[in-house]
Length: 179
Ligand SMILES: Nc1nc2c(ncn2[C@@H]2O[C@H](COP(=O)(O)OP(=O)(O)OP(=O)(O)O)[C@@H](O)[C@H]2O)c(=O)[nH]1
Image (cartoon, rainbow, N blue to C red; front, side):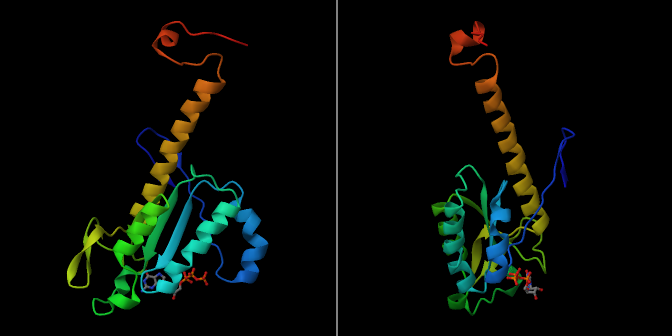
């Protein structure tokens, strides 16, 4: 639950899809019904977990999840990054490029050992390109995105389903009423 300064709050209900196929098959319809956002989470030390994201993106598409549903890409286990093993890890550049291609908001974090607020991580011998966030920051970002989107949807539905529709400056001054 995130409480905002305007006295509203956003409550997040997270559904963790089971890794095991036999559970996934029976639960899958339930997951996709009324979904407001999707978090694609992978393990930064497991390129296989990153590669499997493509099938999750495809699954979302098959379940007709619209592009208006916010998508987040989260690389977890950043505490296990080993500067000497860059080949067997998912680089932030690769993840960032994937997130851009799929319209996702990218985060990297560790659920076990939360990065200090706003710090950049170390990747190989270089400074990581993107900052790492703790889990709470990611939850807040998801909540904020949903709050903004809800506001936008409400504004749009008022503009298009009310007794008048604002189309231009003239209409703003002299609203046309109908119904
Ligand atoms: N070092 C480290 N270990 C983690 C982190 N997050 C989870 N783990 C460990 O990773 C293991 C797997 O965690 P799960 O949450 O079961 O992973 P999962 O992907 O949901 O697993 P399935 O639902 O079975 O697919 C556990 O032993 C966790 O303690 C992290 O950020 N850092």
